[in-house]
Length: 84
Image 1 (cartoon, one colour):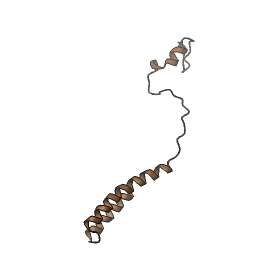
Image 2: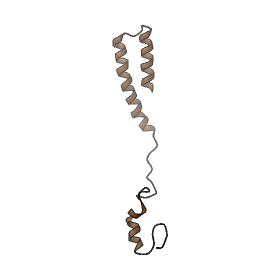
Image 3: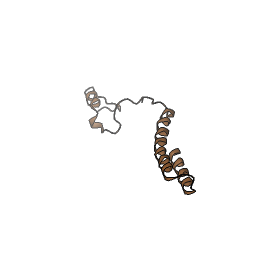
Image 4: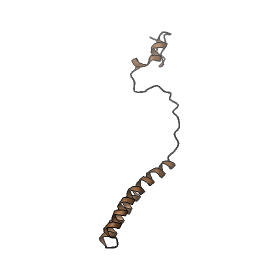
């Protein structure tokens, strides 16, 4: 976003005759660099990753793929508490 504002301002300055074509090209190249700098600095302000407490089981896998359930089924109980 700050790069787009810089490029937009440079286009206006070019339109008013303040910037020539070479300086406009430098500002357009600089707006790409400014966007990447903005992106990389914004990563520093993201919240830190908190590990999940849900475990490593895939919640989208069907229950028949839950091998732990099949193993516990030998003991007649499953993860959801049903006895079969």
